[in-house]
Image 1 (cartoon, rainbow, N blue to C red):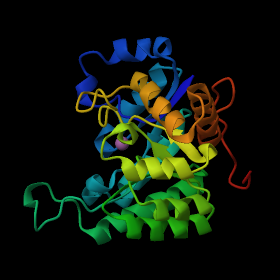
Image 2 (cartoon, protein in one colour):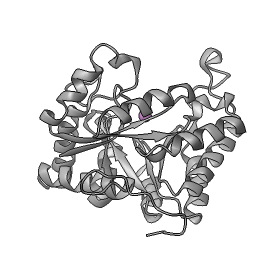
Image 3 (tube, rainbow, N blue to C red):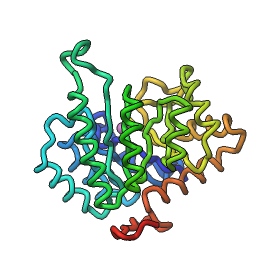
Image 4 (spheres, rainbow, N blue to C red):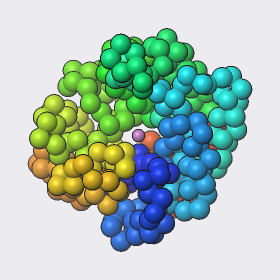
Amino acid sequence: MIFDTHAHYDDPRFDADRDTILMNLASAGVGCVVDVSAEFSGIDRVLALADRYPFVYASVGVHPSDTALLTEGKMDILREYAANAKVVAVGEIGLDYHYRLETDPGEADPPREVQKKWFRRQLQMAEELNLPVIIHSRDASQDTLQIMREAHASGIIGVIHCYSGSAETAREYLKMDYYLGIGGVVTFKNGKTLREVVREAPLEKLLLETDCPYLAPEPHRGQRNESGYLDLVAEEIARIKGIDKETVIGTTAENAERFYHIGKSGEVIRRGAEDDT
Ligand code: NI
């Protein structure tokens, strides 16, 4: 069964048919979904989905673009959210330097120093709670790598979600035992660098992810994405690596269970602060 390690079914673009889609996932070969929060104000919607569906798990965190209004008080609330039994990760957190004040005054991301501060604070929270992290990095490759080096030194486990960096940076992440999240982009015409990364990376370090409703694979590019389309991503990874699709689906699902600490019967395995295995 396919494991979608990064989805946003709480997004308003699923309002009209969310339940229908989720109920039909099993027949599309999808066994598990991690719904990832982005905005602070949307975390309760993410948790509600995880509470409602046994096969949906949650990740709590605040996306770099939404860090301007973060406070220590909200960090305390985040910690309370993270205590929910279905929470398996902290994320998505990271850095996004795409929209800049000079070029996009209307939708500029928070200043870099603000983003870095809350990125580090949320990494610290993940370390305290012994949870893996889901990293968002856009146009911020070097700064993300630097902070993830610090995180590695603290023993944090992470996935670079929707990996979009160079083959060289991917090697650096893999050396630190981080995972790479692979989605629809691998099927895009302009996904050549990502295909090189996928060819080189061990299958044991790859996770399948939709990032739905965004980034639907070819031939659905531009449409609303959903977990059932991951079959096409698995097919492309199989083609690149010269292996069969079922191996890609099976191994990446095992990777996801190991990464998120989900047992064979779907139970979340909470680790004590001392238990680092
Ligand atoms: Ni996302």
